[in-house]
Every structure is written in structure tokens, then in C-alpha cells.
Picture 1 (cartoon, helix red, strand yellow):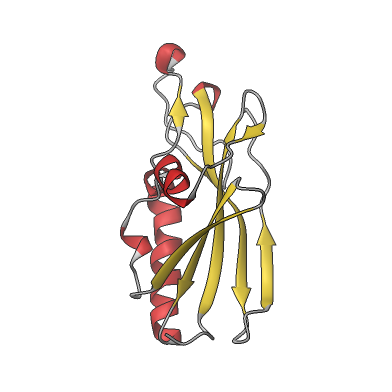
Picture 2 (cartoon, helix red, strand yellow):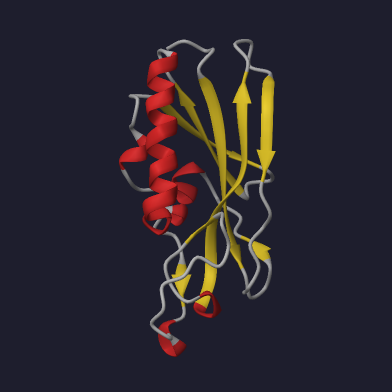
Length: 150
């Protein structure tokens, strides 16, 4: 793979009732708890690697592509998934259905959940994204707010 086509997405899971982030025991625990799903993970045929970050509260997912075209395919697929089915991109959300209103909503633009915001207990969200130079240094970075209870 060409190291000039590489970026890292950092996913976290927060309990919005207590405003605490889940601490993961290892990479497999984080992958299971966050539950990333969908074709966007393989669009553009990336090499995907996983690591824990931020005191084990983030799952760092590194995507490396063979070419710019492959990376652009991924970016398009990921963007479409966010716009069309952001709730379906992870399965790690916990919802309190005891007071469900039956409304589908995205209370926070970065969250991955499908339920009325007041019923959400845990939210999986994209906390940070880094685009890397060929030498592995950060070219650009975007951070996103921790979702709070709506």
C-alpha cells in the first residue's frame, strides 16, 4: 500500500447520562462494543488496522489505500453512508426503549444512532479524524464534540 493515501478515524462510545466514555480492555473489546458495520469499511479496498488510543477510550481505525482513486472511492462511499444511513454504521448504541416515542432522529450530527434522542444511553461517535503525510505526520485534523443528552 502507498503510505501517502492514509488516514485515521477515532471512534468513541459515551454514556450520555453520566457523560463518561467507555474504557476498552483491548482492540477486540473496542471493535465489538463500537460495532462498526457497512460496506464503507471496505470501499476502495483499504488495508484496515485497529489500535486503542486516548487512554483506551478510542478505537483508532487506520485506512491505507493503494492509490488516490481508491481513497476517493472510500471518501465518496463514507460520505454517502453518513448522509443516507449514519445510524446503520455502528451497532454499539444502547437505547432505553421503555419511553420510546417512535420517532427516528439524529440529535447530533456526529452520532451513530437511530432512536428518539431522549431514549439514548450510549452513543458511538466519530471523535477525531487525521489525514497523514507520506512520512506519517499529520497533514490535517478534525475533532468533533462529545455528544450530550438531547
